[in-house]
Length: 431
Image (cartoon, rainbow, N blue to C red; front, side, top):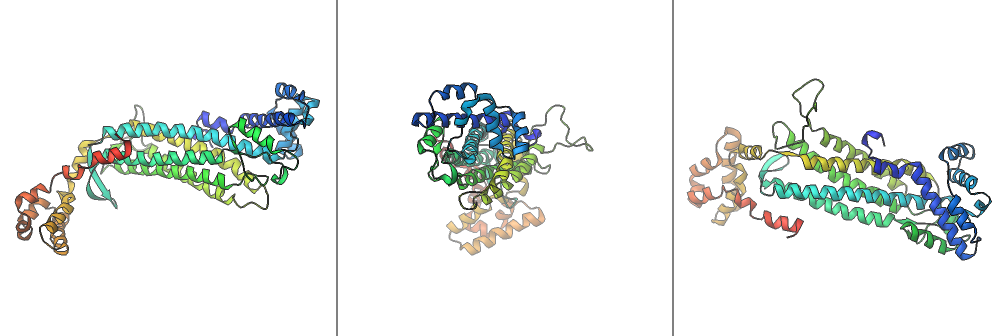
């Protein structure tokens, strides 16, 4: 991931220093377990623990020759440890180190993302409560439908992100799996105790059947979860982009002092953050496809997944981390225009109350077909002639005869549409 869209806390998880540090810890813990089993002398453990180290430049030089990253790493470690290094990697295969390390890195990344979502949930809740009763136009197909509140929109985003948090927590649990089972995963050359020992100290659960590599359905689930979160993020971004359109202008990204919207047009205030989030979501979603394709490896293992994961693991987590932080700032600083919301709601001169009239007519004894015909006939005058809906209804003898003037006027009450807002908020946020 390019630095422009990287936060240091997430990016460092994928840096070589962190990766090799985890490799060294895995190898050292495995030695400790082997010593407990009597496979290697116990007196070598303090030496390995104290002298164990690596040099990244040296690893790169060795790998250029041997064309194997784990062997290059072990050679570098041996140069620090000395003769006792012969006991390192006893009975293990490269995937034991690589896969267990990747699981540690992915759980570290998941913890960062969970913290990001928690921050976003706080911001969404605060803004939802702030605008719980801020009336705005509800739209379906982009067309005015019936009144809602801006707080309900935000509550919907909150509920969705809460589900995403649950999904991510589950994906984290399923990816927090280690494997120290040796070639083809049979434990022929290493006791299962070593795996249990290493995993317990690395915060992982032993993979029940590793087949030499950890099955990639776990990884696919993780990346698909990130893709779902990105899609939810985009839903919020698209809503803001629509609401910021000049013809709507019900909400707007904060335009900071000194900010410029266009190199050509000085008047522009563009929804660049939301548009950026839409682009980020497209990229994150794309990365779940290779993760799904990684599931079908040959027999007990191949490395067709390896190169892919070196890209997608850092890129997907770094991109989503950056995006969630950006979205959090966007929500916290979002500028809301309640006056424009009311203005837009009144733009169609009462048409948003058409369903209430329809239902009142059916309740008064008019068939649904005739009720729909009467309401639509008067509604089309508003669309086509710019008439006032309530005025047209009051002038329609059939409607007036069925409902009476008071009933018609009563139907044009915003509070009718908002009477269950409290109920919805209790469902989302509790008492």
